[in-house]
Image (cartoon, rainbow, N blue to C red):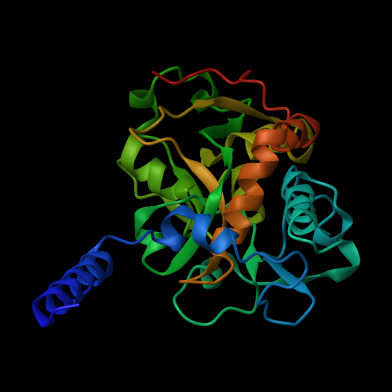
Length: 286
């Protein structure tokens, strides 16, 4: 082989390697596909080897968790959490739960959990601090008021503007209250929905904004004297709940792939029917 021939081959090989190195590579964190390929069942790089640690708030409420006990598997998010864990190769006896305040769970920094299910709405602002799995639930916000309140007869968003309204701190409920209603009186902010329900029953606030399943729970059992005024208009982007993970967690792709499989099998729909049964009976506020 001549020197010129050898040089030509070497240059061609070098050019091919350079092109391959410069070509766009798939982002496992964005698609979950790359990470999912490394999701060895029951052998993920979890905080505690061999155990999947799942976080949630304290207290937690129906229909997401029953009796403030996330370990029971009863309630939509408890059931989803165990279904995800099982899909990843972690049966119930290899799942540990930790309690983390809602706001603290989505702050930047190391986490005490591998994933957290506490009705976290997926937002771009939160994505700057944490990772989200694929969404496991599509949600709307609703206004709850006492049946005896004039607010209960409201049919439009405009009729809510002069009312005293409130929502839990750090939630999409509070964000949508301010964005959709823009009340003339600043919204009251509560540490928990229990605080908001107490303020509602005591007449300290006219209406409480919560997600629709929680609204059904409030009027169905927590405050039978309350009613759902209506659903707030959906924003331009569908609101969805996702599991929260540490920023750039090696588990994000695995958890997302598990959620996607549960959706494809119909498991999420079955659990939603079993535990939430929010059938759209609440009126739409115009």
